[in-house]
Image 1: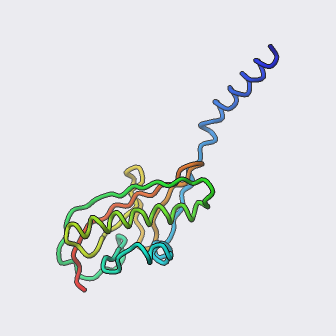
Image 2: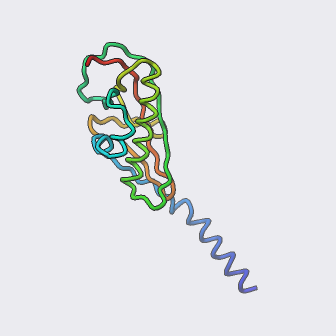
Length: 147
């Protein structure tokens, strides 16, 4: 009987502490740090450029559609910063593929769009790191820019 009471008390404490223990750490990381990663050098096509909203861009010749890439990564065994960079790289790869399909050579006006809340910076993107999952959401417009 005592064992049941202890088990119930422990379970109750865990359930009550669950929401309070939820973590959502917000990080702002320079996009340049992601683009400098060796993995980015290997996986991103240098013919497709990325420009954050507010960043100076070449002349935009044609704008195509706007889209969101919202990848998540497992945070287990990763620092928040590395997980954020990894998720952002995944988002850039997806945006790059779509830009190419639409005939673009750039993704312009990129903003963070986590849970549909816009964060705009000419240098940084926003990332949310939880206890288990790390996520980035980037919204950008596919475009053809002057070389």
